[in-house]
Length: 251
Image 1 (spheres, rainbow, N blue to C red):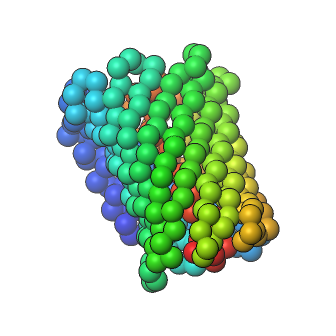
Image 2: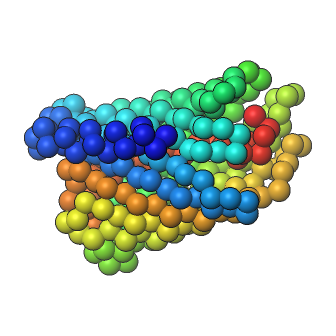
């Protein structure tokens, strides 16, 4: 995972420099996380590229790798969106997750949107239908995130996520919460995130809740940065509602 992230970190700046401000690469972002739970500290990383297809349409692509207790978890997401105004965008997304070393695949598709509710306050949300194998599990999921700029360089955020699986093999409701602060100086390419997350599983196959701390360092290319950056310079979140089930060994 470290080699893949290092290679991507070298390639993304080159892609950003090769693009212009019109059609093509809009911005790119690379983030490395240290995640600490009650047992140990693990690594995670994400790469995002946002491309303008037309003046009002875009495509966002994401790659995420997480060093989980049950093995390396990889996730690929594609977001096709429309941005009719500078303060909002919405569209469709596809997501695919795979656990290394065993047969465990999760696929999702749905709708999502992002809107600036007030200057410096942005809400994003999504709703999805999904399928997981090998147990042939159908599920529904919703999630949302609220960001609020406290200053030009400091923002706070809160996220939530819910998913329901009601099958004979697995009956559970996953609940995910995450909140934190982001320091992102305006006009600079980097950001520092400090967050606390808590996942729980309810229902017939309930498991104890898990709390973890996260420290993330991000580098952006092609975006102005800052806590008040516009919607068109913000990526759609790519949550994974099956993450608590994978971590608990239920899937």
